[in-house]
Image 1: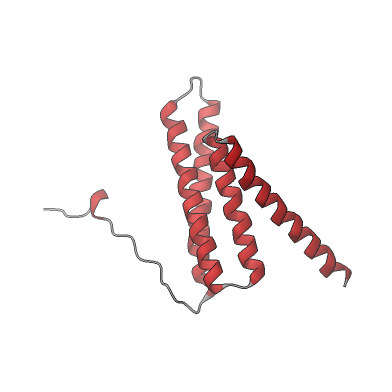
Image 2: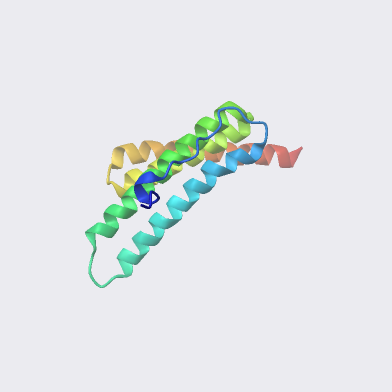
Length: 134
């Protein structure tokens, strides 16, 4: 009897402590993969002749997963990275959460998340201008 398949997959655990900064790319790539697939499903649904509610639901779930992976990336960066990377991860997670909330049509919550992302991006612009001036 075969014992492999969908129900028997065990995901490898993410290490708590690591020295190699390449481990940070794992949640980043997971986030980007889920995000890209959600956007692809949304575009396919928009281009289809008839609206497909299943595709919309599936794209919302992918955006939700992207949001969870971005939050995981943010927590990993808070534990292992410098201040700038922590802020970048926070802005990234806020953007992902904002877009997911827009898809769910939770406008007030999405506005606060996207405003936080905008504030952090403006902070990065000011920091880049100061570094460029000196």
